Length: 438
Picture 1 (cartoon, rainbow, N blue to C red):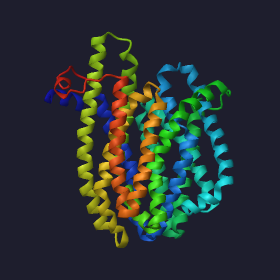
Picture 2: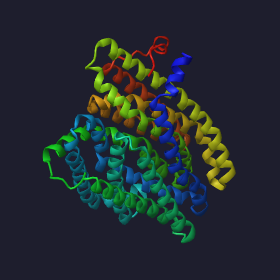
Picture 3: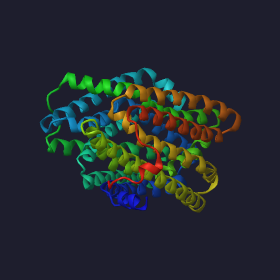
């Protein structure tokens, strides 16, 4: 068991995880360090409006991106090198087409959106532009991840965070544009990275190839069943904020959102691990069905070992992060923001199960059983909306935290059970940890 753990720690997956974690940590450190500074210039109500602006971005992002980055990831190894530029170009064309549809829909529903989120129509369109920029940026980052271009991947991430940080200080601290300044800094940094991504893709010969309707339709129908799955994340986080805003107030939403933002440290580790692990995982899965049974079983055991290692490491990260975040809130925040501490244990628990979900869902993505994954996550999101609504009305903001914990656990278990029907993995711990080296 000890030898297996040592081999895992020294494996290429863990080495890549460390590299991605360092880069992602540097990128996330800027907005993280910026948070207490910005909070001094924004009231809790202002922070609530900024949060709702981000909610609008998430909604548009789910529709415009339509999991094109996932389509590229799962198709990458099946595409000949000469076909990659055309496929990537048509994914960008699909994003722009969906953005046009979102723009027309927003014009018709701007009044409703304003009432629900409390942001004017002009800021809704800015949220859409931010989402389109982020969609193409995410697509390019997926390409870099699959090509294992870690340095460029980390460099662009750090550039985006640095741009957002500098602009936030300029707009919020220096010019004191309140919540509008913070929202504008998020939009401007997304546009900067869009321009950079387009330039780099064009320079590499990946863009502006011939329109292929068949490829666009294929990507569309890959992502469409995943739309409920993607929207489910917005339902879980965005609807919580809308319910809290409408039943408790913008100030309470702002405090709760600070706790969620501080929990982003967990996302750094989860995202870094998945960035390193997913290419290895998809490559291994592509060989399982084409090798002898004994060799396929060895690959499955390796994947299970990595999953167990991730579960332990993530647990340690969550526990450590709780104490660090509690200290940071008490040391750097004041006034109403101090209330964020009471949400932290529940935020960490939720993020733990969401991290575990992200690992096991890869099996479903690879088999392209996205319809079933979308069904699971959408149903769990509907359940969370119901439980959040009931618990917030009776318990206040803490009801949203309780609901998130419960539903994240249910979602993880449901996805794990379905993934195991696609790949019969040897989850028995004793038998798994005595296998050959990774």
